Length: 170
Ligand code: S3P
Image (cartoon, rainbow, N blue to C red; front, side, top):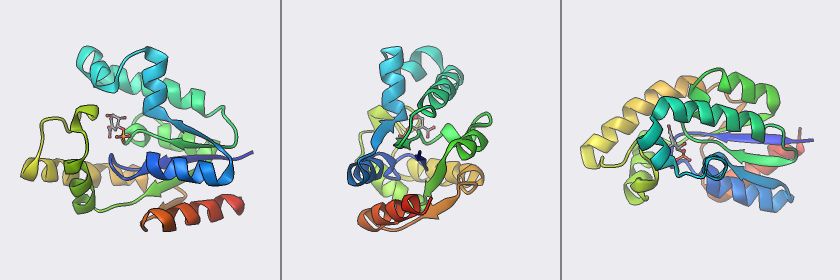
């Protein structure tokens, strides 16, 4: 039985890469944000707006525990998930943790181009403000992200192949 948690900052490619790995290995794929939205019949943006981040983090933790029951699965986690409660420790106890490590500059470039309305934490930020928000946030979060069993920094194809190789070695 294998279970893999992809972790990393918003825009690091967890969902894209997770889907590709799952497809290649014939595993299931779960995106935690999508799981939260289905479970609570609400979008992430609305949950933040209506209930606040604190409540979102509780919902996220509950969903993390739920998806950690799944087997032969690649789980793409929300960017903040490893940084609250004992979530990082919990994921390490439940499967293989892999950090998709990009620089703040790379993330800024990707997030500038992404649909910010899907990501309440960066909605309304752009240019220098976005760059600073990401650099500061990443600096704080890396203490958690770097606890993952592996950190990978390559391009998409290379990372997908590396993850498949790591899983087959488990
Ligand atoms: C968050 C990341 C988002 C989502 C929420 C909060 C964060 O997920 O869970 O908007 O705190 O970094 P992605 O990393 O999939 O964008």
